[in-house]
Amino acid sequence: AQRVTQPEKLLSVFKGAPVELKCNYSYSGSPELFWYVQYSRQRLQLLLRHISRESIKGFTADLNKGETSFHLKKPFAQEEDSAMYYCALETSGSRLTFGEGTQLTVNP
Amino acid sequence: GAVVSQHPSWVICKSGTSVKIECRSLDFQATTMFWYRQFPKQSLMLMATSNEGSKATYEQGVEKDKFLINHASLTLSTLTVTSAHPEDSSFYICSATGTTAGTQYFGPGTRLLVL
Image 1 (cartoon, chains in turn blue, brown):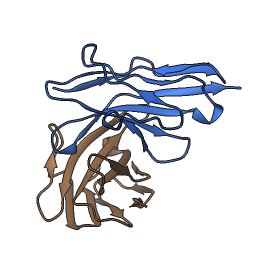
Image 2 (tube, chains in turn orange, green):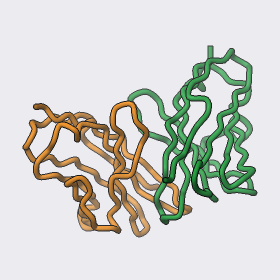
Image 3 (cartoon, rainbow over the protein chains, first blue to last red):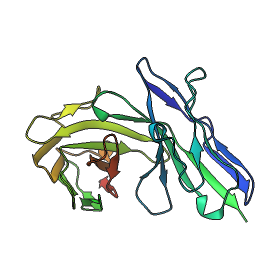
Image 4 (tube, helix red, strand yellow):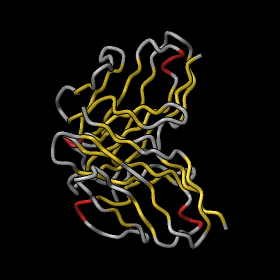
């Protein structure tokens, strides 16, 4: 069965510092991975997907099949990045399996 | 674009009653909608996949007779929690796939409290 693990429930950094949110997955098929973000009092929204290989709001994520990881990175964190971040794995029929989420707090 | 709404945003009901939650795609047609459940401080758990005009596909462990899903049109899916009990209290979230393959657009969620 597929599984997504986000080892850190809470992550706190200072503004301007680099940030990395970890995500590991287990899946027998070819993985399609996503990062979703939920800002305070807002709905869940897509941040980025690995297949696009894009940078959104300064965030990037690289799929490492050897390490089965899809860590989210940003070189200089901003206060507005404070949010809950979920890593998600897409399986058959576009179904998503979510990790438990990491609450990121960027301190001034 | 690609907005998904849910109604109601919160509901309180007595044990034994049924509650219907609506999920609408406002500006796009959604052939597939998904229903999730989220407990406090936990992740989203997929309950079922809803396809327009066909029966929903439920995840393992989800009672299909307890959680009735109807997807009657390309813009509306409903989740009915039948004979609700306090343990059904949770946050229910729907999502819909739009024109961009693999992208799910999420509703704001419905908080259900069963007394």
